[in-house]
Length: 116
Image (cartoon, rainbow, N blue to C red; front, side):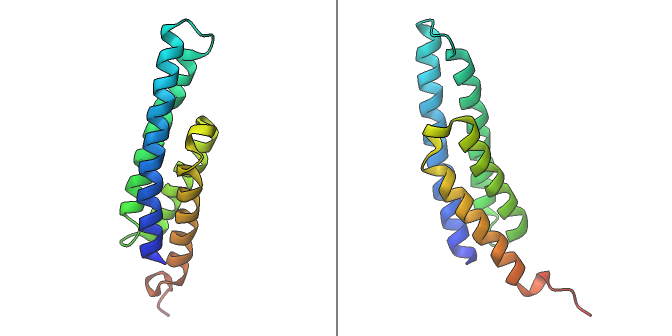
C-alpha cells in the first residue's frame, strides 16, 4: 500500500504541476489582455504550484513517514481542487487517493502500534 501511495502521490503532484502551470498561463494571458480576474487566476495558479510541490514531497515521503505523507497529499489534493478546480482535475484525485492509501498504510504498519 505504501508503494501505491508513493506512485500516486508523485504522479498526482506532477499532474498538479502541469495544471498549475496551465492556470498560470491562462491567468497571465487574461491579465495581459485586461480580463477582469486574470491577476486573481495567476495568484491561484501560484498557490496550486506550491500545493503541487507539497504533494510531490508527500509522495516522496510515502514509505519513510506514511502518516505525514498522507496528510501532505490530502492537503495538496483538496487545496488544489479548491484553488484551480478544473486544472487540477487529474492531479487532485490522484493525490487524495494516494493520501488515503498512505494513511491506511500508516495505520497498519507495526511502527504505529505502541509497544506495551
